[in-house]
Length: 371
Image (cartoon, rainbow, N blue to C red; front, side, top):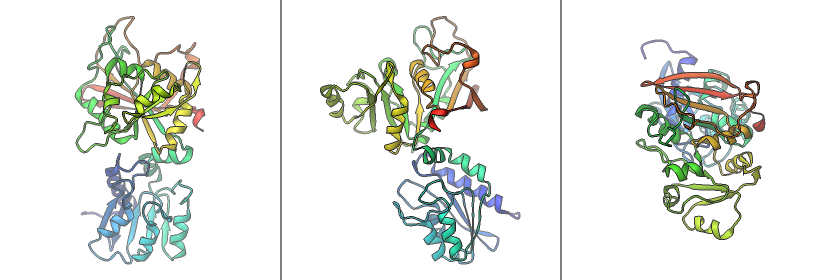
């Protein structure tokens, strides 16, 4: 590459190729691996798709010369158990790799340090903690899901500079420009599920698919307390092609069968007050191997989500426009909080300008319900 490369340089390259698996590997982590011998990169690979070969095996298979005596740089501790694929430690040992440099340990209890022990027991030098923060940040969804069993939840909305998500007429197309809307489709590809309330289905009849080239559609989740989702809505009529979950407190067997007959999956959820218990819903979605949820609902669902403590991150797209109107729509409805002292606190804000629109991403502080 024209200059001497150190451990961080190789790990940075491994991180870059790991990110190519974004959206395709959930609920597995994105992992990249680089094989280096005599100062030259002889192989690299990444985890390309859930259920397929892991990064380490792909990197070894891509080697231009024998990896015997080489060093491997990998963004997560190699697995040492039989899952959908055989252990990566086995391949590393068999190929004669002499040194393995990793970022963080794997939080999966089936691995969690055992991979390192396995390598060291075969005389392989292991260096840990290289660019650990960057590796963790890349797989924040995986680390959260492994720790809690609950999906990582992102609440997204678009509003004007005066805080309106729609005009007083209800018209909302389009608040933001094409580039910002493309970013939303990239996130639909990235996260396992997209969630809306029945009000959004009744108002907009959205398709909620990912419309970027080679993008994967998320599982669609509709929060519908009383089963009011129209049987001719797009989410129902396309449920045979795109997995669709309707979360409801309605236990009417006849009603439920109408949706099941159209390929929807019904998830029964308890009531919390007059709304669905979203904490219970997240536990049930986690058991369905849904590791992340993008909320694209209206003010009612956003309020319920924040109030139930399920939201990990808020994405606010702000358009340089002003709509005005006392009856115009706002991102978060509900009863609201009585004082600024009681407001939901957001931290670690990051600002991105997307062709004129502004995206502010913030973490939700004191997310006690998921600890």
